[in-house]
Structures are given as C-alpha cells and as structure tokens.
Image (cartoon, rainbow, N blue to C red; front, side, top):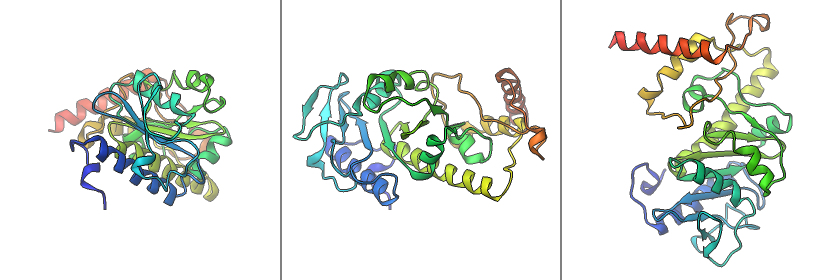
Length: 269
C-alpha cells in the first residue's frame, strides 16, 4: 500500500519527505534494483534545499536520522552522515529542470545489462513505455561521481526523464519521489520484456503512425513531456512484419504523424 504522503499533490513536511525516502530505499532494495551500498535518492525540499541519502550505507536499511541535507551547490547543511559522491548528478537535474523535485539512481540488473552491452532501450515495443517515457537513451560512460559524468548527462537532462548510464546503471527524475521511483521500475520492466522478446525471436516494433498516436494521447494520461523538447522518438518498424521492413523515421516525419494524429483525435471529440 502506498502511504498517503507519497500520493502526488500531498503537501509534505521535511520529516514526511525523509520517511518517504526511507520507504523508497526499501522498495529499491527489495526489488534488487540495488545491493549493498549502491544507489541514491534525493528530493528537493520546499525551501530549495536537497534531502539525499548518505554514502556507504544500504539504502534499504535507512532511518530518517541517516539522511543529509545540502544546498544546490552541494554544501552539506544538515545531517551527521557523509553525502553521496554521486550528489553532483542529482544537482544537475535540479539546476536544469525546475519541474524536477526528485531523482532516483539505481542499478536494476536487466536494464544495467543493456547499459553494459551498450544498448539503449530505444525501440517502439511497449505502448506504456512510449506514452510514459518516449524512449530511454544510453549516456556514454564516465567515471561515477566525477564532473565528467555530469558533462555526459547534460545534453540529455532537459529532454528525458529516464536514462541508462553505460557500464553503470540508470537514473530517473520526476515531479515527486513516487514518480521517479515508478520510472525506475518502468525501466527495469521494459528491459526484462525487451530481453524476453529478443530471446523468443525477432521483436516486432510498432509503426511510426502508432507511435505518433501514442504520443498524441499523452495528455489523456496526464503525462507531461520534459520541458526541453527535442527528445528523439523510439525506433519504429514501418512494415510491422520483419527486420527488413524496419526503418527509423526522421524527426520531421514523426512530428508530421503526431500532428495528424492530434487532428484526428480532436475531430472525434
């Protein structure tokens, strides 16, 4: 059962945010998205400070007293534990995305397997993933906890809510912690289904027209795309039957299909 305070729109105190973060950490650990001392979570508090998990602790076994608070420059202002070395990745999202109030970083095993193999989750396979995330691109490898990782992430942050990190893991963001966690869960679910489809045979991709209809349907599901715009859409299969038919539409071609789908949707109302 989801605690009432985790529901979107619920006004939260700093103490509620801290309790939520401990719950989300347990969820990540129970689902094997993290092991040992891996992963980290953060939330933007009402006053603009950042509540985050500490380093060198299992995120599934935290209590609110273990959490730390920093400012947007990464200076620790509260808490006895040491802040995570990955904090800079979280702060990048908060600086570049005013709409983001929570960030989740983990190493879900199947999705991380794709990241280690150098493969993005960028194929038009699942309607729910297309509506919710568009696609999940792969960010080139950079050493965790370094400015190089932030530099590698920077071109992607304005345009995507979920990213694979090459040879590392995954990171998601959201308007609240529950949304960021659900996006991490979606990454791993998508990776498992993609792997199963590839083991079973040749996955059949959706067509560009179907992708356009799904993207046009986003407002009906209360999905707001990242404010940066310009995100690449998933690879499509125009023939819908075989690998030989598979093509990738240009952005202009997909934009035209989305516009057409929106017009048809409005005409039916």
